[in-house]
Length: 89
Image (cartoon, rainbow, N blue to C red; front, side, top):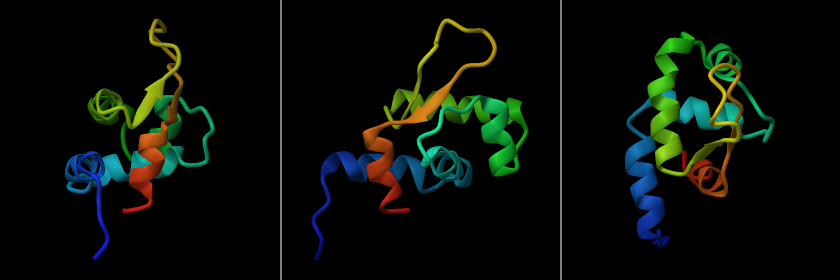
């Protein structure tokens, strides 16, 4: 049986129950910087609905916002932890 680190298990427990969390990571897997409206379009969601998911994924260090100070046009990319999680979803 394959061994999973506690960290990966924690991330998977957080990501797997939510189709939006999974789709956001998939949307960012190409490593391009994206704004929330682009991510929303990619996953078929309304921009205002994904902001809570972006915040949660950011808190878990699965994605990163590179311009936190911006009030509009925040740019997100996937982190190494996010890439690891993608291997299991």
